[in-house]
Image (tube, rainbow, N blue to C red; front, side, top):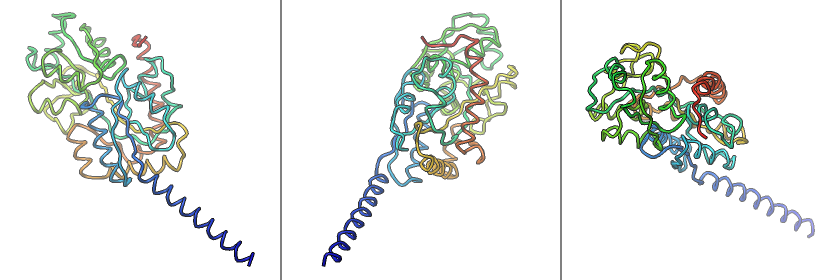
Length: 327
C-alpha cells in the first residue's frame, strides 16, 4: 500500500512539473516583445522598426510592439534597453549614431559594445542632401556656391549632437569650406516636418525619411551620399556625380539585446530576423525607402559585432578631432 502511494505521489509530482513547464513555455510565448526605437515616431528608424516588428511578430508567433523612447540622439532609449532584463523580450533597433557615435560624443552610463548582445544587421541607409523647396539652388554645386556667398545664413536641422545628420554636416562643412547654423531636433521626423514647412534650409537626412518627400515634391534632393545611386530614387545623383568627390556616408540599422541574454535566445532571435529579411513583401517595403539589405553572411551576430568594432575605429577619431561632444 505504501509502495503504491509513493508511486502515485511521484507521478503527481511529475505531472505538476510537466504542466508547470508547459505553462511557463506558453506564458513565455504569449509575452509581448518590445522593440525600442530610440527616436521619435515618424522618423526613418521608426519606419524601419515598424516594418521589422510586423515581420518579427509573424516569424516569432507572438506580439511585438514598437516603443519610441527618444532623446539625446538615441542615448535615452539605448540606455533603457541596456538596463532591461536579459530575457530576449526587450530589444533595440540601433544605428551608427546610437551604437558608434554616441560612445564618443556622450558621457554615457553604459558601454555601447559591452552592454549589448548583437543580434543582426538589418539595413544600410545612405543619406540624401536635401534642401527646402524654395531655396534658390537646383544642384549640389549651386548649393555650395550659395552657402559660400551667404555664410552662416542657412540653417541645417539635425537629430542632435553626434547624430548622423550632425556628423555628416560637419564633415560637409570641412570639405566645402562652408558655414551654416545647426538647429537640433529630437529626431529626423520633426526636422523633416520643419524642412517641408520651410523653417530650416538644409537637412542631411536618411533616405528612409527623405525619399517619400522628394517623390512628393515637398523638398529637393540634391545628392545621395552612397557611392552608387539608390534604386528608390535613381534620379538623385551621387555626391561624386554632383561635384563633391569622396563625400560618402552610409548609416545602418541593427538589432541588439541586453548584455547577458542567453546564447540560445540570441540564436533564436537571429533566426527570426533572418527569416524576416527573406520575406519579399518586407524587402520591397525596405527597398521603397532606399534601404539596402546586408548579405546573409553579414546577418550573423558575429558579423554585427565585427562591423561595429570597425565603425568605432573609423569614426571615433573623426568625432573627437571635430570636438563633437555633448556636455
